[in-house]
Image (cartoon, rainbow, N blue to C red; front, side):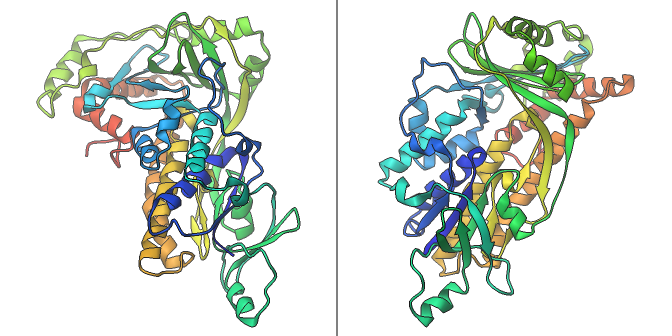
Length: 466
């Protein structure tokens, strides 16, 4: 029998890895037996990735709050041994040339705004840390698929692992209150708590009958890696008529591209020659679609007006800069459709959803993975609190604490990102002026700028004044 059963997928490996780490690092929960159903082939690789290799195009921008979580579980040191890129500056601007905003970690007395890390580096680091803790991954992970879930009668539950058939009435009675999991390799497991960490198309969520709300955006995102003549140490994002393009440092002279556009444009950009694609990227990040923004005397008046409220942010005086030009495409281009989804419930008795299984957001701010990390940390904390008072870790009243903690934060971030997507998807004169005012406000109203940074870093609950 297992205390905690995690159902995962290739796209959501980080959710269960972080949850396993959190449980293993808490004195009250380290005794819990954990089993994972995941057929991800990456679990077989636990070696450092060479820093001088070609960066993978699948990356995550982790916030200081997430970095603190990785440090707490002892995994961040492994990331530092592999390729990563801290960045302390960010520039965001609009294709109309009417406004821009610069952000600097010094604005909030921090060393950095975030760190860009390849997904496979995050995965390897968590696996290596498990290996250090002498966790037997081979015994913990079942490299197979879930076929069915059977919840206890009169409740919607999920289970613990029982590797042998029940031999006594007591055993049968005990298992009758657990979730039964049938696997594609013929095994049957039982668990006190099942965690669905199996991505946006969560099989666990569907079997549990949890409904969702959401919609598909008329957009796709192209991701790839480009090379520069010199190192890039700033995160750049420009809003174009069809969606934002982001240029993110990934170490050495490399940057990651995340470019949102219509599905038709994505198909065209994916199939064009490498040379034409690089030209298109440079055009999108420079003079293409509109002029560079400039400061005005009104901007400096606004800056002085608000300087008495919390002081002037360091980046307020920074001028607009042109991003470094790409000189070559060094990875394949991948495209994927964009959508928003939010589960009506994160939990039911003996069941919890984390990460993309519970919510997906627009990638324009790179916050999706950080929301999932927050879920894993919050659920581990709730489990530990339950164990400390002798509670059943699958009890709904206990799991509701996790949902209450995370749902508000995730909905707020989803709403902010969806609002940005809608505001920048229309080319309309009055709306363009409104967007410009927002950029100018974020650039020259220092208290607002500081709170936006704190919110993006995971230190504040609202992007507006706190």
